[in-house]
Structure formats: C-alpha cells, structure tokens
Image 1 (cartoon, rainbow, N blue to C red):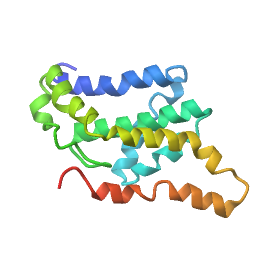
Image 2 (image 1 turned 45 degrees about the vertical axis):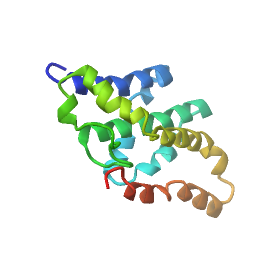
Image 3 (image 1 turned 30 degrees about the horizontal axis):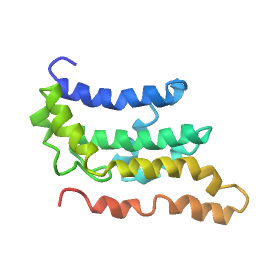
Image 4 (image 1 turned 120 degrees about the vertical axis):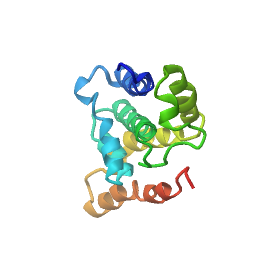
Length: 163
C-alpha cells in the first residue's frame, strides 16, 4: 500500500498467521474477518461459536484465536472499541500509519504486551470445545451451553481500555 506502510504492516499481521494456521483450507482464510463484523454489531463474543463450526479441534482453535487477533487489529486500524478497545500503550493511528517500524513498535507491540492475547487463548479453547459442550442430545442444555459462552463478553466490552 503506497503511502500507508503502517496499515500494510497491520494487514500483513492479520494475513500471515492465517496463511500459516489455516492456509491448507483456503475457504476459511477470510473467515476471521467475521469477528470484526460481529464486533461492529456488538456481538464479538459470538465468534467462538462461529469458529466452532469448523471441522477438527485444531482448525476450530486456530479460527477462534485468529478471530480474536483480527478483531484486535481491527480495533487498532479503526480506533473503535469492538471488544476491549485499543490498548492504552498503543499510539493513535495517525502517529504510526506513515511508518512500518512505528506500526510495529507503537501499535502491534503494545497489543502483544497488553494481555489482550489472553482473549485469543480463551476463544481458541472455546471454539475447539464447542462440539463437546453442545452435543445435540438435549435441546434445552444445548441452548444454555451455546448462549452461556458469549454472555460475559458484553460486560468485558464495557471495561474498555479507554476509561
């Protein structure tokens, strides 16, 4: 991207893990962007349930984690709170968008060191375990199990980094 090297770094940071983790299934490559769409709809916590539809626990876990990662990167690019918001140590986009190295040091590094990646771990585990928790035997139990997963996330959204 000419003139926007910082944005290019953020886009590469989104694309490369996807190519490494789910590159063998190209149909799933754009799927983690769905987490950002859900974030715009204030339903980001539902992403692990979407990722939980993939075949195989490793694939589900990868999609769950990638969805969290893409959501966090979307927050950096847009400056909007989609789940946790931009980490407090991250600089505004205007200060890093003109430089690839500034994007790494002032946007990606603060994200990596903020603790927000714990969400990716939780979402990976949730997506991987979804078929075990929701088994399709007792509809009432499945409804409770499926709706219990995203329930805590709207509260997490209100505890944004930006107070």
